[in-house]
Length: 524
Image (tube, rainbow, N blue to C red; front, top):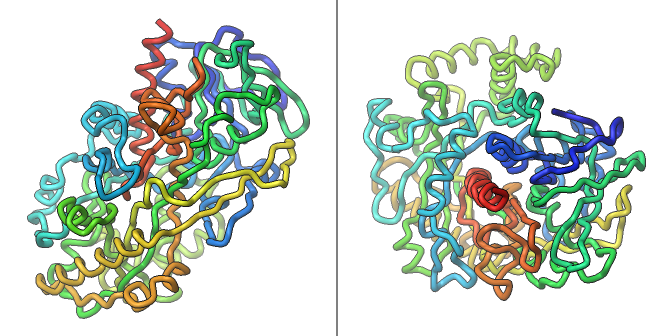
């Protein structure tokens, strides 16, 4: 059931779990807990659509290095970032969970093997249970063999959700379940503590119009997103001694993925280039070809995990991406999201669209080779787990009286050195195979201090409430419970001890499924 705190104040009094934040993790957690027979409160700051006054609560102070994702990559709305993300699914790799002696702070207190069954459950909840798991089988489906990129690089696929917006994917269940109550415009202000200073008894929420409500439950889970979870916990607490405020790990070692174009590709061998690097579309699912450095190379040279892809760039003024977005909205019945201008552009690009549709339907591939003029190497690199980036509070306050976020994002020499070697490996591999000639970015190879200005963040906010076996080394335990509390949990990518280079959402949702199991067993 869905309510609006601006209009009603009702709440079930004996909830089993109160979840703060109705984004990807919050929605999954709420649905799975309700399916287990638990009474659930799901609190969302925003409404059904994005609203400027609510979005302004995210306005933050940024340090010397720009970070677009702190504003453009967060959505304070029912559905969270799932209303905008592309829906890309990619697990962390086995060695991402392991302690790597050459990387300080690496290693999770759980293994990839422990997450395997939860990764599988996450696929079902994301609506992609029938996606082809085996990369070799994907190649066989299009009549090709796995590309051998040599000793330093491994090819692999990422996969994409058919419906990335979870409020649409699970809309009926969120609306109709008698065990699940969603409250919109419920801005969490503080967690209330009992006299033992360890048990959370409620979460105080306030609307922008000033209405307040305290929601009570047995357990409380913060699913506010990587940055906002940290900001919420950093706020001064009424009693001055909240256990989370005493943990020095809070806000430290923030991580994002470096996202950067680091080379041009020329002299393309079109005979096999499109075969190996164009997206594959089969049975309604999209598979994106990528490649990564092997673990052996990372170990030998003391590098971070890094991967990349060939980026197919349209000619200047081309509107292919906008046309495809309009087509997808039409096919998904999202007519209200299509403007008159969108339709004009669609009609004006019909010849190109028809060619691309023919390639898609006949060959199961995405791009029309005739429409592309530039190819670039795009890299995605993990950051050092114990790097210098940090989330803190600014002196400015928002409309609710909460201190705003300050983010100081840093890029290290190791991260730049990892990108340099990755470009070198791709250059050697593509030359040996005769696929293309790689022209590395001159600044990356010769003036990395200048190259930093070309690096983008990936809107992947990780770290700051680090998972660890003890409070000496982190903020939450392996079951995501905040150290020093009895019933408060963090279910956010902020718990990631290290990040690999994989998109974090799929791993977060696997952790969410794992947390469901823990909460259900505790409440029985």
